[in-house]
Length: 218
Image: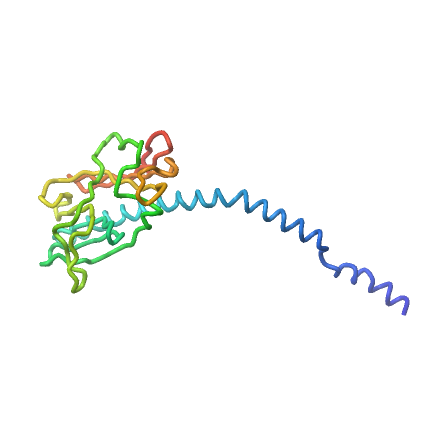
């Protein structure tokens, strides 16, 4: 009986687990590490959103270009601030018909309908900032007519060019950045400003990253 107790005693000691003090120390370490990491994670998520939305715009521009070339008809791309989405509209139909809508981040998270305050346009090419206005042309979304939304529109032609509503080649710069509020043009961090330029003559697209001082091609 005495021998059995002697053999089992170390095993019982090893199964005691953690003390309350040890658990509190671990919790304190996790709390400190979380407090340090959260601001960096939040900043990274903001940066990622600028990147993601810019690349989304570029992808849809390239898709509109290819669709226009393949279908031999005009495809209108709209950045629709009223619907908060990127739209592809087939103008080969009468009336023009919506073929794709991709949602954008909420204006309280990102802005793209104005230029960020204090940030110059990428130079070269120094194309003017995209101008948003009420859409007087409109389109059909299924059986529903849509008109007068606040948009920036570009028509991708079957010859590869990009024009405005009157058929004039359009070259423009679109900014994407987190703002201090949905009505402010002040970036929360200038290093998170992104820009997309569209070349009206060829439909080529270029992506820019602002590092707080200057632009670099993305």
